[in-house]
Length: 282
Image (tube, rainbow, N blue to C red; front, side, top):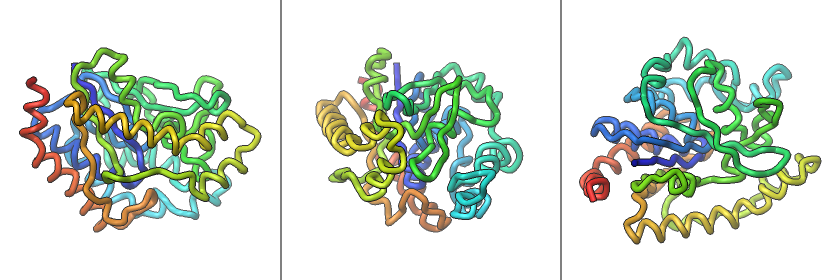
Protein backbone atom coordinates (compact mmCIF):
# COMPACT_ATOMS: atom_id res chain seq x y z
CA UNK A 1 0.00 0.00 0.00
CA UNK A 2 1.34 3.41 -1.00
CA UNK A 3 1.04 6.50 1.18
CA UNK A 4 1.99 10.07 0.36
CA UNK A 5 2.61 12.80 2.93
CA UNK A 6 2.55 16.49 2.05
CA UNK A 7 4.30 18.92 4.40
CA UNK A 8 2.80 22.39 4.78
CA UNK A 9 4.53 25.69 4.17
CA UNK A 10 1.81 27.98 2.76
CA UNK A 11 3.08 29.42 -0.55
CA UNK A 12 6.23 27.28 -0.42
CA UNK A 13 3.96 24.27 -0.94
CA UNK A 14 3.66 25.27 -4.60
CA UNK A 15 6.82 23.17 -4.99
CA UNK A 16 4.72 20.17 -3.94
CA UNK A 17 2.11 21.09 -6.56
CA UNK A 18 4.68 20.49 -9.28
CA UNK A 19 5.53 17.12 -7.76
CA UNK A 20 1.82 16.22 -7.59
CA UNK A 21 1.22 16.95 -11.27
CA UNK A 22 4.27 14.95 -12.33
CA UNK A 23 3.04 11.98 -10.28
CA UNK A 24 -0.43 12.24 -11.82
CA UNK A 25 1.02 12.33 -15.33
CA UNK A 26 2.88 9.11 -14.54
CA UNK A 27 -0.25 7.49 -13.14
CA UNK A 28 1.11 7.31 -9.60
CA UNK A 29 -1.78 7.57 -7.15
CA UNK A 30 -1.39 6.86 -3.46
CA UNK A 31 -3.81 4.63 -1.56
CA UNK A 32 -3.75 6.94 1.43
CA UNK A 33 -2.47 10.44 2.06
CA UNK A 34 -1.78 12.91 4.85
CA UNK A 35 -1.64 16.64 4.29
CA UNK A 36 -0.57 19.37 6.67
CA UNK A 37 -1.81 22.94 6.23
CA UNK A 38 -1.27 23.98 2.58
CA UNK A 39 -0.13 20.41 1.92
CA UNK A 40 -3.74 19.41 2.52
CA UNK A 41 -5.26 22.40 0.74
CA UNK A 42 -3.27 21.67 -2.42
CA UNK A 43 -3.30 17.91 -1.87
CA UNK A 44 -7.03 17.53 -2.50
CA UNK A 45 -6.41 18.39 -6.16
CA UNK A 46 -3.95 15.50 -6.37
CA UNK A 47 -6.61 13.13 -5.07
CA UNK A 48 -9.20 14.57 -7.48
CA UNK A 49 -6.59 13.99 -10.23
CA UNK A 50 -6.90 17.55 -11.55
CA UNK A 51 -3.58 18.10 -13.29
CA UNK A 52 -2.78 21.80 -13.57
CA UNK A 53 -5.44 23.03 -11.14
CA UNK A 54 -2.92 23.99 -8.46
CA UNK A 55 -0.73 25.65 -11.09
CA UNK A 56 -3.61 27.89 -12.15
CA UNK A 57 -4.36 28.66 -8.53
CA UNK A 58 -0.75 29.67 -7.87
CA UNK A 59 -0.17 31.71 -11.02
CA UNK A 60 -3.58 33.24 -11.68
CA UNK A 61 -5.45 33.53 -8.39
CA UNK A 62 -3.14 33.72 -5.38
CA UNK A 63 -2.04 37.25 -6.30
CA UNK A 64 -5.60 38.59 -6.07
CA UNK A 65 -6.33 40.79 -3.06
CA UNK A 66 -9.50 38.83 -2.37
CA UNK A 67 -7.40 35.69 -1.97
CA UNK A 68 -4.71 36.96 0.40
CA UNK A 69 -3.56 40.25 1.86
CA UNK A 70 -3.56 42.42 4.98
CA UNK A 71 -6.92 43.97 4.08
CA UNK A 72 -8.55 40.61 4.67
CA UNK A 73 -6.95 40.41 8.11
CA UNK A 74 -8.42 43.70 9.31
CA UNK A 75 -11.84 43.01 7.84
CA UNK A 76 -14.06 42.44 10.94
CA UNK A 77 -16.14 39.92 8.95
CA UNK A 78 -13.06 37.91 7.95
CA UNK A 79 -10.19 38.33 10.47
CA UNK A 80 -7.87 36.24 8.35
CA UNK A 81 -4.96 37.06 6.04
CA UNK A 82 -6.74 34.95 3.43
CA UNK A 83 -10.22 35.75 2.20
CA UNK A 84 -11.99 32.79 3.79
CA UNK A 85 -15.14 32.88 1.66
CA UNK A 86 -13.23 33.72 -1.50
CA UNK A 87 -10.43 31.15 -1.08
CA UNK A 88 -12.51 28.28 0.30
CA UNK A 89 -15.86 28.82 -1.41
CA UNK A 90 -15.81 31.16 -4.41
CA UNK A 91 -12.62 29.74 -5.93
CA UNK A 92 -13.32 25.98 -5.63
CA UNK A 93 -17.03 26.28 -6.37
CA UNK A 94 -17.06 28.95 -9.11
CA UNK A 95 -13.75 30.32 -10.40
CA UNK A 96 -11.54 27.21 -10.46
CA UNK A 97 -14.03 24.36 -10.01
CA UNK A 98 -12.99 21.44 -7.86
CA UNK A 99 -14.03 18.05 -9.25
CA UNK A 100 -16.00 16.69 -6.30
CA UNK A 101 -17.19 13.67 -8.30
CA UNK A 102 -13.65 12.61 -9.19
CA UNK A 103 -12.50 13.12 -5.60
CA UNK A 104 -15.35 11.09 -4.14
CA UNK A 105 -14.98 8.30 -6.69
CA UNK A 106 -11.30 7.89 -5.82
CA UNK A 107 -11.04 4.94 -3.39
CA UNK A 108 -7.99 6.54 -1.76
CA UNK A 109 -8.34 8.16 1.66
CA UNK A 110 -6.91 11.60 2.39
CA UNK A 111 -6.45 12.99 5.90
CA UNK A 112 -5.78 16.55 7.01
CA UNK A 113 -3.75 17.20 10.16
CA UNK A 114 -5.13 19.72 12.64
CA UNK A 115 -3.97 20.90 16.06
CA UNK A 116 -6.51 20.73 18.88
CA UNK A 117 -6.33 24.09 20.65
CA UNK A 118 -7.27 22.68 24.05
CA UNK A 119 -4.92 19.69 24.05
CA UNK A 120 -2.13 20.90 21.77
CA UNK A 121 -2.20 17.47 20.13
CA UNK A 122 -2.50 16.53 16.47
CA UNK A 123 -5.68 15.00 15.12
CA UNK A 124 -5.96 13.30 11.74
CA UNK A 125 -9.36 13.85 10.14
CA UNK A 126 -10.45 12.42 6.82
CA UNK A 127 -11.27 15.01 4.17
CA UNK A 128 -14.37 13.49 2.63
CA UNK A 129 -15.01 16.27 0.11
CA UNK A 130 -18.62 16.53 1.22
CA UNK A 131 -18.23 19.93 2.88
CA UNK A 132 -18.10 22.41 -0.01
CA UNK A 133 -17.09 25.19 2.39
CA UNK A 134 -13.93 23.20 3.21
CA UNK A 135 -14.02 23.79 6.97
CA UNK A 136 -11.39 21.10 7.61
CA UNK A 137 -8.97 22.69 5.15
CA UNK A 138 -9.48 26.05 6.85
CA UNK A 139 -8.60 24.41 10.16
CA UNK A 140 -5.42 22.69 8.97
CA UNK A 141 -4.31 25.97 7.35
CA UNK A 142 -5.11 28.17 10.37
CA UNK A 143 -1.72 29.77 10.87
CA UNK A 144 -1.23 31.52 14.22
CA UNK A 145 -1.93 35.26 14.08
CA UNK A 146 -3.07 35.04 10.46
CA UNK A 147 -6.22 32.92 10.91
CA UNK A 148 -9.01 32.70 13.45
CA UNK A 149 -9.45 29.41 15.28
CA UNK A 150 -11.69 27.08 13.28
CA UNK A 151 -14.41 25.10 15.02
CA UNK A 152 -15.29 21.53 14.03
CA UNK A 153 -17.70 19.47 16.07
CA UNK A 154 -17.56 21.89 18.97
CA UNK A 155 -13.74 21.80 19.15
CA UNK A 156 -11.35 24.57 18.13
CA UNK A 157 -8.46 23.81 15.83
CA UNK A 158 -5.46 25.53 14.29
CA UNK A 159 -2.68 24.73 11.82
CA UNK A 160 -1.76 21.06 11.82
CA UNK A 161 1.93 21.81 11.55
CA UNK A 162 2.01 23.09 15.12
CA UNK A 163 1.54 19.54 16.42
CA UNK A 164 2.78 17.32 13.57
CA UNK A 165 4.52 18.93 10.61
CA UNK A 166 5.56 15.71 8.83
CA UNK A 167 3.07 12.96 9.79
CA UNK A 168 4.90 10.09 8.09
CA UNK A 169 4.46 7.92 11.20
CA UNK A 170 0.72 7.86 10.57
CA UNK A 171 1.41 6.21 7.22
CA UNK A 172 3.58 3.57 8.86
CA UNK A 173 0.88 2.95 11.48
CA UNK A 174 -1.69 2.59 8.70
CA UNK A 175 0.31 -0.32 7.29
CA UNK A 176 1.78 1.39 4.23
CA UNK A 177 4.87 -0.44 2.99
CA UNK A 178 5.74 2.30 0.48
CA UNK A 179 5.87 5.93 1.55
CA UNK A 180 6.50 9.14 -0.36
CA UNK A 181 7.19 12.28 1.67
CA UNK A 182 7.12 15.68 -0.02
CA UNK A 183 8.94 18.37 1.97
CA UNK A 184 8.94 22.10 1.32
CA UNK A 185 12.27 23.13 2.84
CA UNK A 186 15.70 22.55 1.25
CA UNK A 187 18.17 20.07 2.68
CA UNK A 188 20.00 21.45 5.68
CA UNK A 189 17.11 23.56 6.93
CA UNK A 190 16.93 23.83 10.71
CA UNK A 191 13.80 25.26 12.32
CA UNK A 192 14.13 27.76 15.16
CA UNK A 193 11.63 29.37 17.51
CA UNK A 194 11.41 32.70 15.71
CA UNK A 195 9.96 36.05 16.76
CA UNK A 196 6.58 35.25 15.22
CA UNK A 197 6.32 32.10 17.33
CA UNK A 198 7.19 34.01 20.49
CA UNK A 199 4.53 36.60 19.70
CA UNK A 200 2.02 33.82 19.05
CA UNK A 201 2.70 32.31 22.47
CA UNK A 202 1.84 35.65 24.07
CA UNK A 203 -1.23 36.08 21.88
CA UNK A 204 -2.60 32.62 22.76
CA UNK A 205 -1.52 32.60 26.42
CA UNK A 206 -5.07 31.58 27.44
CA UNK A 207 -4.42 28.26 25.69
CA UNK A 208 -1.39 26.75 27.50
CA UNK A 209 -1.40 23.44 25.59
CA UNK A 210 -1.37 25.27 22.27
CA UNK A 211 1.48 27.46 23.51
CA UNK A 212 3.47 24.38 24.51
CA UNK A 213 3.00 23.00 21.01
CA UNK A 214 4.30 26.26 19.54
CA UNK A 215 7.22 26.40 22.00
CA UNK A 216 8.37 22.84 21.27
CA UNK A 217 7.62 22.82 17.57
CA UNK A 218 11.14 23.61 16.34
CA UNK A 219 12.76 20.86 18.43
CA UNK A 220 10.15 18.30 17.40
CA UNK A 221 10.34 19.31 13.74
CA UNK A 222 14.12 19.01 13.58
CA UNK A 223 14.03 15.60 15.26
CA UNK A 224 11.33 14.39 12.88
CA UNK A 225 13.25 15.68 9.87
CA UNK A 226 16.36 13.80 11.00
CA UNK A 227 14.29 10.62 11.27
CA UNK A 228 12.86 11.11 7.79
CA UNK A 229 16.26 11.58 6.23
CA UNK A 230 17.65 8.52 8.01
CA UNK A 231 14.76 6.42 6.71
CA UNK A 232 15.41 7.83 3.24
CA UNK A 233 19.03 6.64 3.43
CA UNK A 234 17.78 3.20 4.47
CA UNK A 235 15.48 3.07 1.45
CA UNK A 236 12.34 2.99 3.59
CA UNK A 237 11.00 6.37 2.47
CA UNK A 238 11.16 8.20 -0.86
CA UNK A 239 11.60 11.88 -0.13
CA UNK A 240 11.20 14.92 -2.38
CA UNK A 241 12.99 18.03 -1.13
CA UNK A 242 13.39 21.31 -3.07
CA UNK A 243 16.94 22.32 -3.91
CA UNK A 244 15.82 25.90 -3.31
CA UNK A 245 12.62 27.80 -2.58
CA UNK A 246 13.94 30.78 -4.58
CA UNK A 247 13.06 33.25 -1.85
CA UNK A 248 9.40 32.22 -1.69
CA UNK A 249 8.03 32.84 1.80
CA UNK A 250 4.82 31.58 3.29
CA UNK A 251 2.71 34.50 2.01
CA UNK A 252 4.38 34.91 -1.39
CA UNK A 253 1.93 35.72 -4.19
CA UNK A 254 4.18 36.81 -7.08
CA UNK A 255 3.02 34.66 -10.04
CA UNK A 256 6.50 34.52 -11.57
CA UNK A 257 8.15 33.32 -8.36
CA UNK A 258 5.42 30.76 -7.77
CA UNK A 259 5.66 29.58 -11.38
CA UNK A 260 9.39 29.02 -10.93
CA UNK A 261 8.85 27.06 -7.72
CA UNK A 262 6.11 24.92 -9.30
CA UNK A 263 8.32 24.16 -12.30
CA UNK A 264 11.16 23.21 -9.96
CA UNK A 265 8.90 20.67 -8.23
CA UNK A 266 7.60 19.33 -11.54
CA UNK A 267 11.05 18.97 -13.13
CA UNK A 268 12.52 17.53 -9.94
CA UNK A 269 9.84 14.83 -9.84
CA UNK A 270 10.33 14.00 -13.52
CA UNK A 271 14.08 13.79 -13.00
CA UNK A 272 13.61 11.42 -10.05
CA UNK A 273 10.84 9.36 -11.65
CA UNK A 274 12.93 6.32 -12.56
CA UNK A 275 14.31 6.11 -9.03
CA UNK A 276 10.80 6.50 -7.64
CA UNK A 277 9.42 3.72 -9.83
CA UNK A 278 12.31 1.44 -8.84
CA UNK A 279 11.52 2.17 -5.18
CA UNK A 280 7.82 1.39 -5.72
CA UNK A 281 8.61 -1.82 -7.61
CA UNK A 282 10.98 -3.21 -4.97
